[in-house]
Amino acid sequence: METNETGIKVKKVLWPTDFSSSAKKALPYITSLTMQYGAEIHVLYVIEDIAHHESWYGEFDRTHIDKLMQWSNKSAEKRLDQICGRYLEGCPLYIKHIAVGDPAQEILKLIDKEKIDVVIMASHGEKGHFRFGSVTEKVLKNSSVPVTTIPVDLKKTSDS
Image (tube, rainbow, N blue to C red; front, side, top):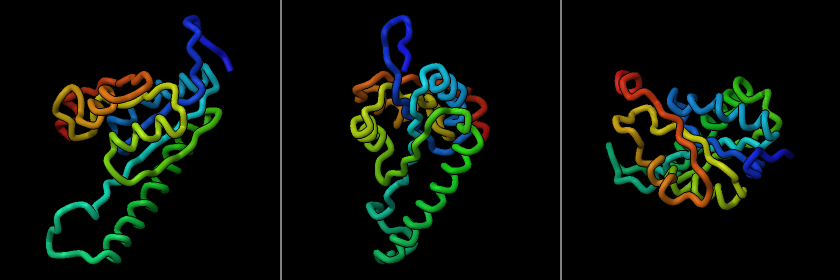
């Protein structure tokens, strides 16, 4: 494991993704860091927990919610496999994580749990109309490690 001129060791990089084209803009930075330092990439996708929402279009029983969450989890696994296979195969090590809950809270939990050294994420998700999205802002304000945000062209994402 190498250190750079400042003596900072980068062993573990977290890339939170929402599978948007905005999140994908962080990939060149992720792969560069991992190639340079041989760091692990932790790829995180957070499924929103629909069980905590008010009912819409009628009541859902717990089995229906469980089925929706299982489908979301399988879909997320498939997407993560595609991303890791397509974009991260040249990286020394990548680890896929799927969590359920609030994206910012789950990112912050994973930072502590996995002892992440740096987070690389898009400045906002696909539907962002401001310089920083709410998830990015929460992570920036509460992270115990450096967070690098990759700017996303607001015009391109708002026209999507």
